[in-house]
Length: 537
Ligand code: AHR
Image (cartoon, rainbow, N blue to C red; front, side, top):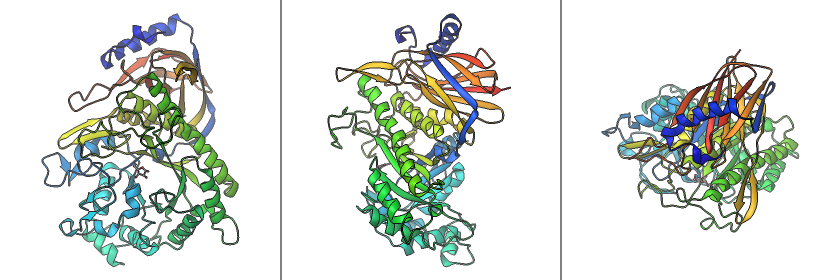
């Protein structure tokens, strides 16, 4: 099925779905998805649908934070549009304040009366500290998200870390720091549970060796004040696929005479950015990057190839962790992922690391979330980097302008998986064949994930083919559907993206799918992310 007969922009999507319906009855399926309802993988923790907000560029200032006196609609200085959209997608968790920024940040600069806070020339930019712990906690409370803090290991002490926990979690009548929090607006303790012990300790977080980091980790996590609830610590994992870091950290921490129990570690942080689009020609950080908007079909598939590597990184880390923690107490925390292109597509020059987000990035994001779902039993937290005005963002804003990117729609669709039971799903489809630097190359034809609650089965599917639809039979083993609805994100142009002038170029379309029972036919549009919601019974 050639794409040229289909789709002329988002408006033509309805036609595409009609086409799907017609072809479903007329032609033979070339693809098959088997959903094995009797083979649960695990519960999908809502926290894997989390976000990352660093004090960097315009993520906070001009993004989340517009200031209390602003004419831009806000709730106590927080941009209302961001709050509304995060509630819409049920954002479960937000990581803050970094990133690399975390290891240069003194949390004590960001509390107390805002007018009296010190201004710093911080890691990425000047930091006015108008937005600190009280503001971030208000952001979490107004969005319904759980906070996940990253502590400064490189340049603050374990005592300073204890004090931050005290400020956040101590009762107001039992500690001066608890009282200060109360004066900052919250008499009730924040009860922050998730604490990252540094960030990228092998790089901006201190250039430490795994053994050195293990020592810091022990110091920072031993005898920390709990104030009523156990804390969940996240240890810094490797730089991409550097398993040596994982093994050496585990040996230094969990083996030998002074081993600590893996139960005291909640998660193992993995960062994987899709940045090297050079097709193996270079590993130079600048030269290897592609462009967010100017790309050809090879670059389109290259993003999915590079992004897909996260699955192997997750599995190989899981194996090494298992050698020291056979019960797998330690879960995977993929708390920075997404595309990272060269500069040039920022909506404003002051927005460092900002880039435009196209349909290509949405497919990459969906591919990543499907990987997380398929390994639900291994995953503790996921955090897309970064929420707004940055790398793989869901939103772009400048002053009073605000838009959602195609990534937002992926999170909107995929929220149905949160808290559901992931089940095994087998995808078979003709492979994509294309020329990669004049060499015949292939890529998987359809992939995705499936989960169910008592009433609904959700199957999310990525069709990466730039020009061809995939006609599939979806076989439900151990269940049947009484009705099916499809929600689709696609466009006739693989470069499609939203702008302040054209905020709705990429949008979702939902339509009822004919058919019921244990075998459903559906044609997945080219270059698409699809959610099939099936009412069970
Ligand atoms: O997300 C931007 C940066 O990328 C973060 O600060 C750092 O953790 C990573 O290297």
